[in-house]
Length: 146
Image 1 (cartoon, rainbow, N blue to C red):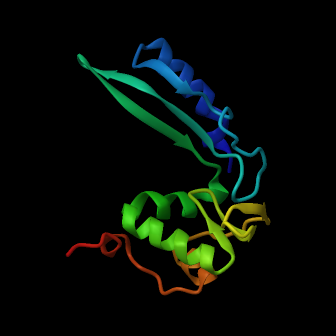
Image 2: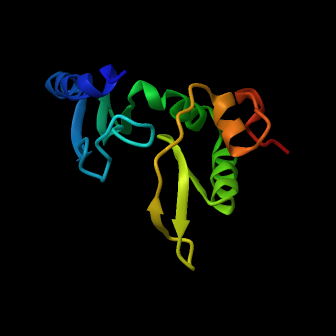
Image 3: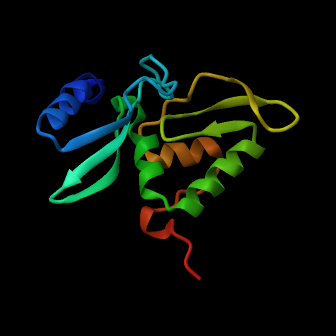
């Protein structure tokens, strides 16, 4: 379940050694990621710069434990508008949704999260949508086009 997370530092080290990654902006576990085995925790993030031929480009790499696969898949197959709409819907319902999990959230008057509960376990995107109370939307219909 945690193979991707466990090998992430090894893969990063190899990419740095190969000089594919040239500059590190953030390293895994330096930006407040949680450390646990439940959905909503233990994802690893890297932000940096890579070199492709002669060009330098910003790059973000993420590794998730298997229990977060459905949340990550939904996040990265939804367009920006779809993701913002989903998070906004969840916020109004007293929840918080991210690429790592879905949980109850207590917010203050200005909407800032005061506490977050344990994430629900969902194996598929369909289960996430069901937990939120929405009809499943396939990835090809997630991008709003006018």
